[in-house]
Length: 293
Ligand code: NDP
Image (cartoon, rainbow, N blue to C red; front, side):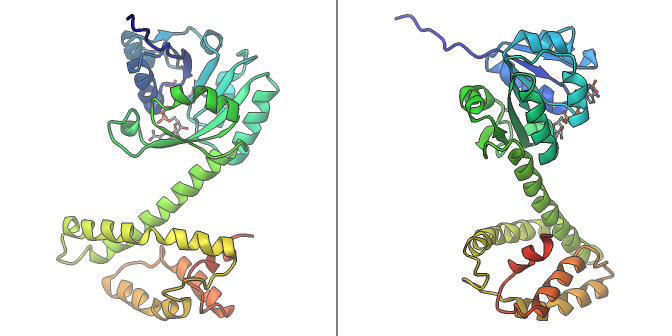
């Protein structure tokens, strides 16, 4: 019996920065015919040696394939690169980080040029692309048809999570997840600052911190449940009144350790405001409503 290898979709990739280069390698390794272009041509040389076709211009690169992936610095660079290319009939997948509004505008811009549009938010750093380090994935939103038709190809560099037809949703989820990450980093920075001048080995402290953050992370499910039901007292274990009573301990400890409270204070201020509104029986979910204008 003759074995017929499954034909791999050919595609174009515009942008060979750290991320674009990592993406390109995975498609080449998986046997996808790949055409690449980069503003600075030298960055394409290594990939050419690995089997990529290097286009002379962005317009030539776009013309080469129906599936066109862009991974550039920001939305203005996408505008620069795609202006003057013919997108008619193309499937454009934009993995460039941007705001939800930029993604929605880019989707409309693409539609008026006769192409389908899928936006992507990469939840990974380059070493996670291609599975060398696990855990990375890409959020997608926009044309469902495009996503479903090309999912096999899009799954090569990293896992895929389709989050909706609204082209802005990938960026929205991306920024929301990264914002939570910065909150976590802010808390960790304060924690390390507290032990900084003491005889506590940061390497001994780090596993305790990581385990604690992991243990606390599932609290987001209760938050979601409360937001859905509108009942912020549902399942409360540590109520706001009790938590606000604990604030002076945090502030005094910081002061005694010579540590600024500038990262923690804004959160404590919200907790106190919510308590002053008479929400002592809730936990922290009500703070979300204080943030939304
Ligand atoms: P790099 O800075 O390494 O590369 C930027 C790329 O954009 C290069 O190909 C550069 O071309 C190109 N570029 C910039 N401005 C222009 C322009 N005006 N015209 C044409 N090309 C331009 O960035 P990354 O590859 O790391 O990131 C690419 C995207 O991926 C970004 O949106 C980033 O936010 C996102 N991302 C990156 C992650 C990371 O950890 N690296 C993680 C998650 C998302 P040239 O080589 O000529 O300068």
